[in-house]
Length: 153
Image (cartoon, rainbow, N blue to C red; front, side):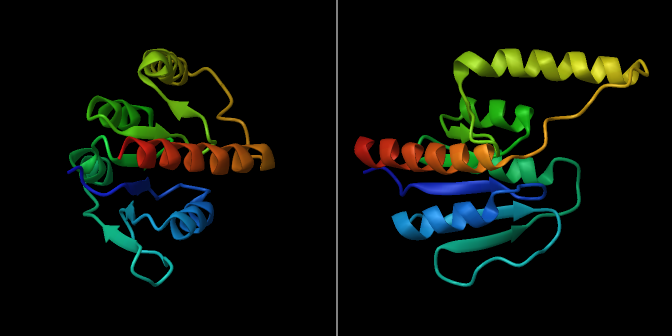
């Protein structure tokens, strides 16, 4: 029998934590909120706060080691998304856009190009500001991912 469905959140810069808590409560899915520093999370049996050491990529390592086919990972970190996809997890960006096997290669390549441009001193903008449409898309994507996992049994 497969393990329980769960949500792992790369939480340090996640703008949709409240939305995750609401969906998790409605669907009765446990959530692990992983960060390098403590912050408040709702009290209750479904939400676990995990504070990892301040080591480089410690939160990413914790999440990647626990990601599997019954896990939804929430992250904006492209390299973490890649690791979790390889482990079989469903991965959703903070903006609601899913990371997939088909899209992750282009995302990694774009990340590398942007890093090279920044290293070369080029002034480039960051990601687009988080918008109301992103929040709505995120809620829909998370709900759909959980429904798919429930149907798989």
